[in-house]
Amino acid sequence: MKRQALNDLTFSDIDEKLKDNEESLQNLHFQKALQQLENPIKINHLKKEIAQLKTIKREFDLGLRTGKDVK
Image (tube, rainbow, N blue to C red; front, top):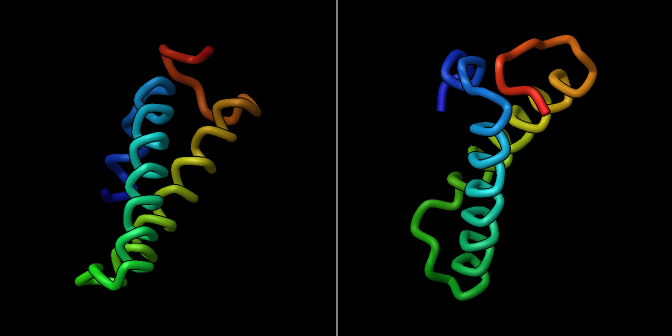
């Protein structure tokens, strides 16, 4: 997902996307362990997106970013 698209998400959307990405990352790690993973670069991309989502979430918590759907 592009950075601009991540910036447009609301707080609840970020939480939902973060949970989905963490589950996907876990599944990719299982596939890697079983040697069924076709594209190992997906793990790096997913880790980067998780980090971006956590950063945006933290900005909401600190009040640096405002939105209509904050806690």
